[in-house]
Image (tube, rainbow, N blue to C red):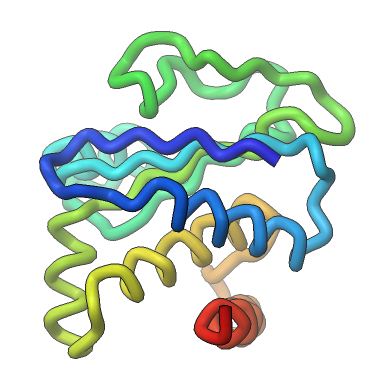
Length: 162
């Protein structure tokens, strides 16, 4: 499993930590061993632009997931590269790039303060949530949301023991 991590902010990110938990989550979800994910830490301006372009919502958000598995031509340009084509390529079938997750650092900081969490915990939750979306979980309907949050909490409980 490969997890490319790109930090477009000034916040210091422990990339090894996110690689480790990303690999753990993907294994827990029984994803292929040769799967690839791009994780991007961004600011609110970039998140707002992405949210407006891809979800038609003109506001920032905490996390966006872009699933590449069902697409012959994934969205271009890659967000991890700040607008240039992605270094990943779609191989189809098993493996290949699962997708790209973009997390807003300002939104994560705000939510962590509101919940009384350390920022690392909030970022871990958002990363887990993003991976679940890439693995096929949805949170649009209440039933699906409940199932997704249950799986998220299960994974996070395992992470806290590591």
